[in-house]
Image (cartoon, rainbow, N blue to C red; front, side, top):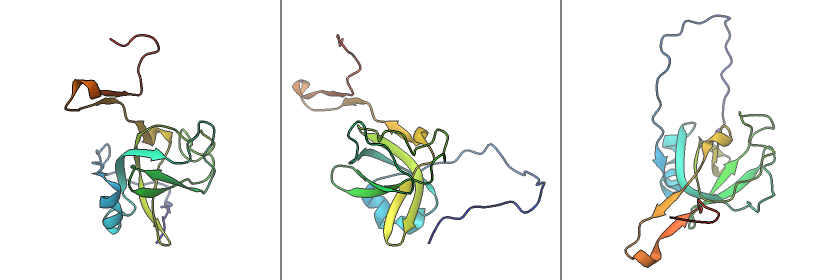
Length: 149
């Protein structure tokens, strides 16, 4: 199965509904890969992902698969052509850190993938991790350069 582009065949249309909100399901990689057919061509969100190719300088190439991981499971992230998306993904530095990625659910040949519409679909995960001990608080990314109060 593949993606299709809808191309209008008439010059004018009547809009019967607009401005509707879409509820984007948040999934884990195992949930998505086990039920990919249920989500194919839908907008989905997967939290706590890192790009394995992120090294601070590598950039996204067009029509390329990259690996994203939750630390245990891997998923293919696919880029489309250069200049697609606003802002475009291709040509930008592959982001380091932990992200929630929103994108279209795809399957190409036997590979289950996600592809984002633009760099706006990469949401950096920040916050304080709740722990049972005061000595084990983890804060990331560090929101200060000199003092943390």
